[in-house]
Image (cartoon, rainbow, N blue to C red; front, side, top):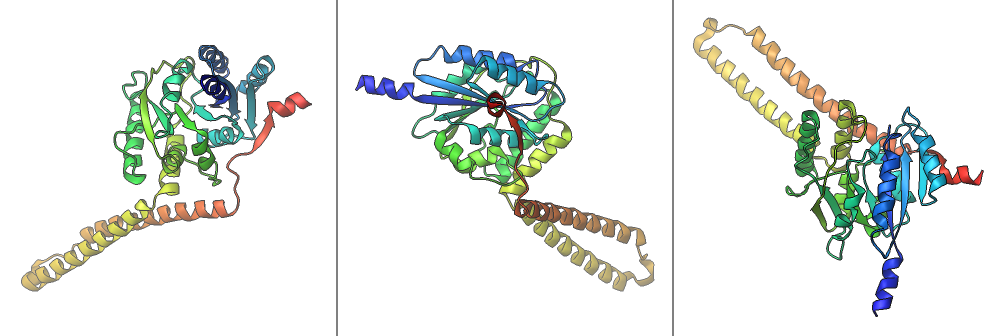
Length: 324
């Protein structure tokens, strides 16, 4: 019985999925750390899937070199910059592992902590997020964005308040199979994990300082990621629009009633109030345009989805490079 258990463990494969963007100076160190930590635990094999999200540096050349040195490394090169979550989806579909671990390419998610996540996976837990809520390396802007993302995920996606989303994730094959069923062009991995996993927990892990450079997430990219989350998994913003419309309509009715009564009582002593009318028109007009824009965002994404807009396009792989 003991030998059968050991044999079963030896067959377990961990797939490390790493989106790469401007990581030419860091990804080799990350892969080396993965190799080092996997040698410390018997019963596991591993593969590393590096998804090059078409940065302007020489990341793809370095990925191909890593593949030549270590056949356990597989590289995928996107045709253009699709974004981190699209790159994760490409890696998830390529992964063959019983356990899939996703982490950053900059060394901030230390591979040495991976078994803290993996060991938490069991029958009741199938998704484990690394928790570094006391992140001392994040800038004020990133902390603000993280807090805002956490608040919106809690409100829009019904995320448990105590659950912290991070980029260091370990999950089972069954969950990834469900995540891979999503084929829309605007994936939001955390929402897909939340929808697919039945037991999601946090595990405290170390968080290291970025080895080189700075985050590839600009304000526009963070806003796009946030928009992917709430437009793909919630209609609450549309309901808010309807509620705001009802509130404005009620306010307008009460204000009109007040003006009529005031005019009847004071007659010519009451000024026509053009400035107040203009202000009200600007407020209502702004709300209408805002909600029309929101509806347009939903309709546009529906159109692109129905038009079979690709989630990603793989331009080249290390496998095809090896075969040639």
